[in-house]
Image 1 (cartoon, one colour):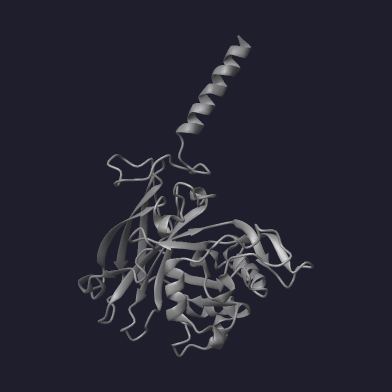
Image 2 (image 1 turned 60 degrees about the horizontal axis):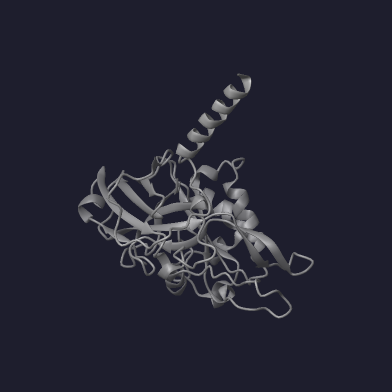
Length: 329
């Protein structure tokens, strides 16, 4: 009788575990490509919880062949660590842009070294628009994109030893805009649906404001060139919140995001909702995890990052006014 009870208990636990969608299983791989969006309820739904606080977007701009970039990653890790008082106000994203992102064989290293391509359509577009590597140099960071090199912001604010001070100086007591993310996960189809509710707490100056939504993948362990390593290469480097692609279409996403109606941004309390999807089978021209992709992106380590920013024609071009992040569940 005791053995029977133990068996029944194990069966119940297993059934509960399989029914739960608290974490997307890894790896996920469909047997066929998606011909259309799902017409059934999603496997799981989740929502933002602390979106009512002011948050900044910190972009660590780097590449796996950048030998001086690992110290910046360490600083970023420290800023989002739970022990840091600023952690709940920071959305960290790693942008792989520029010349240090090339893939291919490296003399003296195994063929598997630096074969993964972490560039993205949207990252390449941002790199062209937002910085001049000859002026800034690697590693560098953009904080709310106030430091992009076409602005009057001091380049020193982009240097990683100054990130914490810069964030403290610009962080607002309360957000001017909030982004409430509700995500839905269709696991078998590897499709994410997202509802983004944007609210302007104060009336903004006349101009165009945009909402950008992207996918990032956390804790990617791979090769990294590192001057601090005795071998000059780290085979188990942990890349944090790597920019993978943008919502918007299957070939690379909308590089500028979606325009927010001026009737919303020009009044205090203006609210607007955007509905978007991301297809992991087709995203980034199939790099996300279609048939034959090995390995596919790990959906259980992916996050949705959304931010509102000024259009290039505004008085503060490209500057981010609020960011939000939610785990894909």
